[in-house]
Image (cartoon, rainbow, N blue to C red; front, side, top):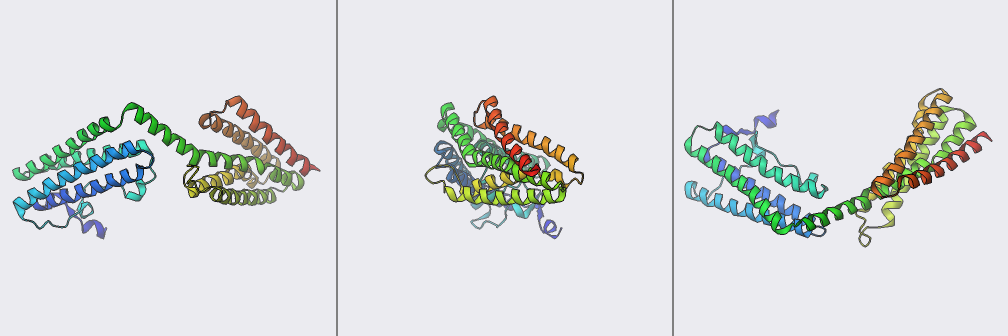
Length: 324
């Protein structure tokens, strides 16, 4: 609450402060666009060129605003930024945009320009002073012009073929970094824990003991798979992406794959828990087959036969060992 009280309301800003706010906003947006460009340059050079061009446009508008400020108010620009003004549109922190997908980054950039234009138009409509109203309208027109410039730059640098190529590269990177390690983890967690969980279940018919064994097996397998994936390949030569991301994807999905049929054993009744665990295993195996078909282009029937057959064999081994 104290923070909000320390922020100045937009309607209380002087014309000089409005101009200073616009200057700092243009500077921030230019930095954001250059950050996008830097992050995309290696994999998506054409899209990076678009953001470099947009940053240059922001620099030009900022310089025009600085010249106008110097002409009207002198060379000293007040220090006022977005966070100092209540109700002013905010930008997402840079660290929250670093891992966005390509299309999402393009959408974020378009939203940045729309937010600024809408804000200036709304502010101009609420302003009674003619000079301030004109200034806000000019800023709104500048933001609308930015959108046109972005479209022109996109047409210049991004042909349909280029967009298709970059989108395909992004999809491939998503598969290598997240889907493949996650799928491997889900398969390992779902299938490899079947034997110890159901062997314990049928050997002891104690649901709590079975749950503890399943929890230990799932967490242990998740930690093992996560570290193995992260340590196996740094991604530099293979292009598979960050080893930390792959490790988390593999480890988390391995743990979830095992916990799926371990959690039913929190139910005290043995046969109720076991029947529910059977159903969960069936769902897990079909989910794996669906993921293989959806993302890895594996024919669904073949994927289902492979996964279900493998899971059935492991499941049978666990039941036979536990019953013996």
